[in-house]
Image 1 (spheres, each protein chain N blue to C red):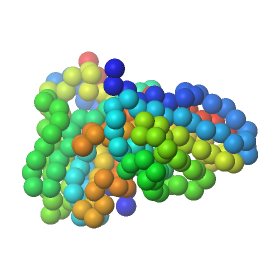
Image 2 (tube, rainbow over the protein chains, first blue to last red):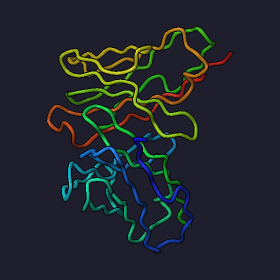
Image 3 (tube, rainbow over the protein chains, first blue to last red):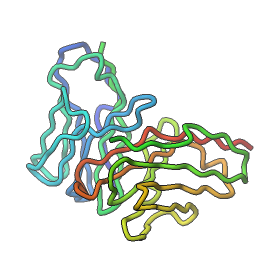
Image 4 (cartoon, one colour):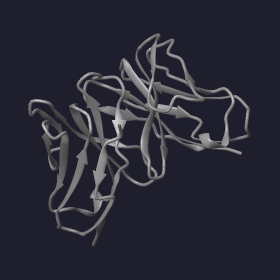
Length: 110
Length: 112
């Protein structure tokens, strides 16, 4: 089954404790991206990657890092999480026209 | 540069029609529409491309006015399953495939 998977689905952590949210897709898509979703703001792009070893900033990249060492994986790294990064995070991969979203990761930073 | 959507929310009875609008301040290459049901991930509905090409959902239609940088999504004879939040997403002419920007969403509720 074609899908985008994210782990973990839920995470509660404390300020400053490094964490990684994994994202993997099995559709051989070159384009992948990360979004955060906050009430009233919609989905905002954090980072995107157009291919292996090619990443670039979206609209809200501050406080996040990504890497793209393999086509299928695109992890999101929060080196020192802060409470304002509490949000719902979605990973997506894209074919020519359509983005396929993962199930989401709900992150709470206390 | 986030596109503007209107209305913010709409409530319908089953069988009624609705129009959701999306406008951008920048020149657009394409407009995408997604629907997100509560607690789920967004799902692709359709894309409208510069030049009039459309690809997507059979039962939902949309328009794209390139000169005004506006798009409208038309939901006719709405069904209960149409409930959810609708997002438009835009790509500028100068950055296709790169920075993708979603609007804030329009919440649609269809009542029996």
